[in-house]
Image (cartoon, rainbow, N blue to C red; front, side):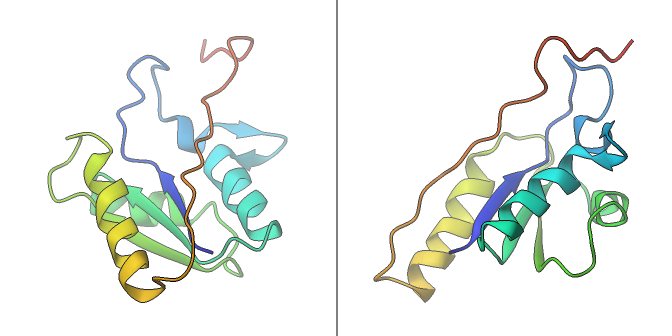
Length: 114
């Protein structure tokens, strides 16, 4: 089963890019990708808003994890494009399988960017 990580937001409430905040020496995006990989939910598709994010985030993710990158056609337009396009592709490729949309909430309020 494929997975989808939505990483194209501005992180405006956090004040900095949530995806690269480190906890225990690993970025959040790396931790989520590893958890999905460990659960055998590869390939993992990561939707980002800018091409630069592919390199920026990719440097923090283990090279052994199978990642498919998707760049938003319109940066910061919202997650619906990232959800619909990969999902419709997956349904076309594997029509007999069911798909679930999993969301990972942001950091709990106890984590602060200050």
